[in-house]
Length: 312
Ligand SMILES: [Zn+2]
Image (cartoon, rainbow, N blue to C red; front, side, top):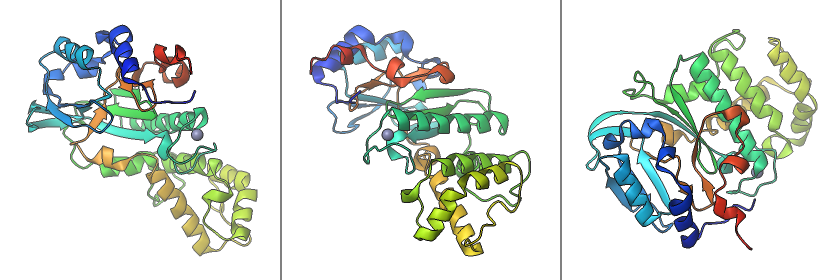
């Protein structure tokens, strides 16, 4: 897969031959009149904003007529979406973009994605999903392949009115040190899982310490992880690693974990988010709602047909 940009002709083929109205997810159709829609018609940004549709048929007509470069909807609901007036709540969303992951085990250049980092993004979204369901009691959430990563969208009624969202973000990414690291359940367990996931992927380039310290941390990686997993408070008691370094090391991983999710998207309820079923033209992939994440493979389920018909 070379993730090449889609041409105007390919966009037209996609919306005329492949896109189906029934692929617009239920959670969008249900309250379609309360969403703001935004369109990027030529790849230069979402210049066509504050649009509303009375029903999904009218939206469908618009797509088939315009085959836009990109389509988003608001995560918020409004009585008058065209004016963004009378806010009715917003989905709680987490945006994990494979291209923005600071620690990844592939050789992707900045701003690029490959099969490997896409699968690392999937691992992150699954961990967040587990914490949302298991710890926070979320019942209705939707997973979406965004075209270059994953969106997790919570549509529980209780969550929609939430105004302060940054604590939830800290919780599910394990980016704040818990008071007691070794409680078996709750936040400390999330913190430990996220720590292990990130540390596991790290190599020399990801650790901003002196060579001796980096070598020691990497040599002891397995032992650190296994001690942490088995509740050993001395998991970082290693010769050559002082308290200051320990603290900096934990802080470093916490900052990386905080960056796994684009926090601005979670916190800002005015955001717009790519609409599942539409085309991510920059990389020629479909944004799709995922029904079965365990078996989901973006290179099989999110590649539009026109990509296979390309001659070059
Ligand atoms: Zn990659």
